[in-house]
Length: 70
Image 1 (cartoon, rainbow, N blue to C red):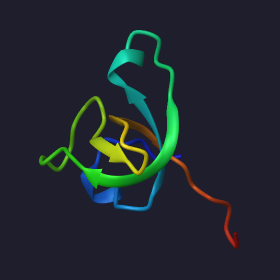
Image 2 (image 1 turned 90 degrees about the vertical axis):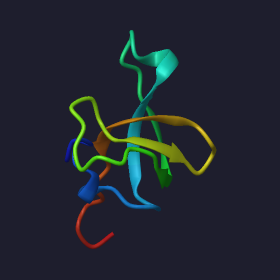
Image 3 (image 1 turned 30 degrees about the horizontal axis):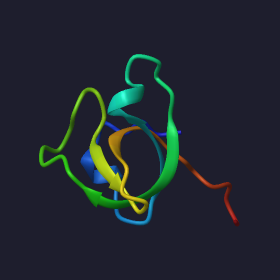
């Protein structure tokens, strides 16, 4: 799994695990598909901030990679 610190690895439609602001103390992740990339810089040490298709906003912790051929 790639981490979510590089903007170039993230694009709309990508499945990711994010940490919502309210879940930062626990590190609980939420899975969804990227709608918008909100971070402007090319990298961010705590993860690129995105908006999911369901409207939730958080920082990418992991990019969900599908097995080859799926």
